[in-house]
Image (spheres, rainbow, N blue to C red):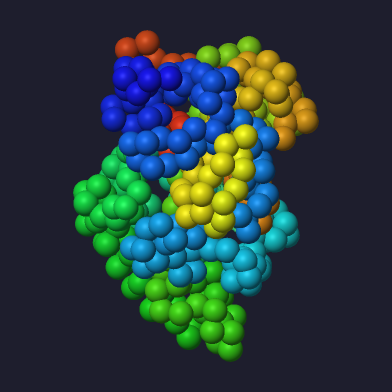
Length: 406
Ligand code: HEM
């Protein structure tokens, strides 16, 4: 495919179009024509097909998560950042963080998540409101905030830093430039403020018996020395970011589907046990994180192509999840699809630690929403808006017209 054609697809200088439908058209073309593709402009390799994507995720020895191999400035943020670590240190730290996400810890959270959801839904003003602002954003940020031990009510403050960071990341960093360099200058300020805030919170928890992961991690590390200076902030930043925006996107995309399919919304009201499968199909068709990055450690073969050592590879989860060779009628939304081996939570050693929590939040919130409102329509005069960052899928604003039961 010639580069002009790609740009004409609406990529705005980025290889992946910002518009979600155009992006899926592009994925389909790439899977058919160049399932493993080298972008000469940025120096990035891209993997689009399910088997290649799954292979990369399963082989951390050949496909490293340490981006600092190609972007030395990434090292500043890598310490303690699980998604940017390789074995063996990754396994040690993951084991420590995983204690906060055991099945028991997560299932014990259900009543609290239900109470938070009810509070938020009780607070909506009138029958027209914004699903993202009123529920899909504040719920996951409150849950992860409580888990970390952040002060309640800081959700909007956190959002004011995170929104510009999510909007600005529009494109692959060019190999040879800084990962967090000029390209991302606009996010420097909000990111610094967010990290200062987390630093302050970590200090407050140091040496205390307070509740929350920030205290627990520091207590458990007393002898281990796993968490050097900066590492805790990096972990907190990862958990805070990964722990809420993805779930926000999942909730938003699910409600969008239900607006498009009122018949399905009615069926789920009658049989809420079907909600988990619907959520899995939303994760597959509207994968909140569309991609993850890896760097080759050696000369490797992928999809019939030879890739040298120290080459960055964009691994397109969202494309793999629409691969016809893996999913029958892959472009169709099938609410009861089972099995559904999507890769929206990744796979292998970095498989999402928060997946059980995200699934629980999704189930509780969607069930409560359907129970409370017999109709969740899309207002004709107020369209949703979407994140334009190609690394994300989901609504940024989702107006709803809801009628309560009473
Ligand atoms: C729908 C919601 C979510 C999606 C789609 C999602 C997606 C992902 C993906 C694709 C990865 C793999 C990254 C890689 O391979 O490089 C990942 C890792 C991770 N996620 Fe999630 N995530 C979600 C929710 C959450 C939540 C709620 C939390 C925490 C409370 C969380 C915490 C993490 C952590 C800590 C990792 C790093 C694991 C590791 O590197 O070992 N995520 N997530």
